[in-house]
Length: 127
Image 1: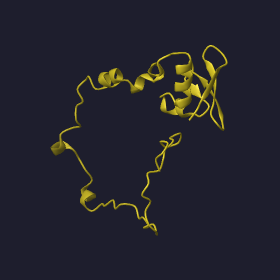
Image 2: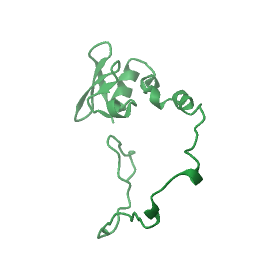
Image 3: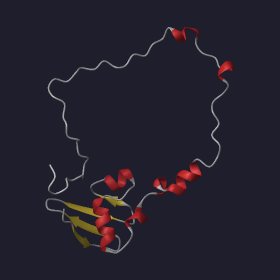
Image 4: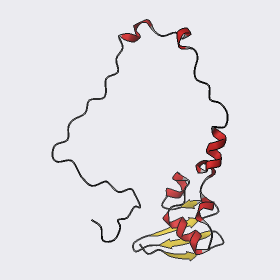
């Protein structure tokens, strides 16, 4: 897919593909496709904008996705809940049941191809 990138401002870009136009703001970490906003990882448009100004696109990944952040989150010991022998439960806990939800079997042959994600494109020459 060919993306045309036009710099509008210091951190704002207009990225066009064959059919649509997207506005990317690298400083605010925003794209009108909303993938950058929701996932906090640069979308294809943000990556194109970053490459246009010769910046590393990994610099725009949110800190919550970084290895250092995960390491800090699990640096402290995680203590399990209380002692099971001293815990209290309702007397009728054995009688309670939680069956799986009722589902209908779909008619027809199940699909064999994987469903593509939004923004995912096939490899040229493949089916």
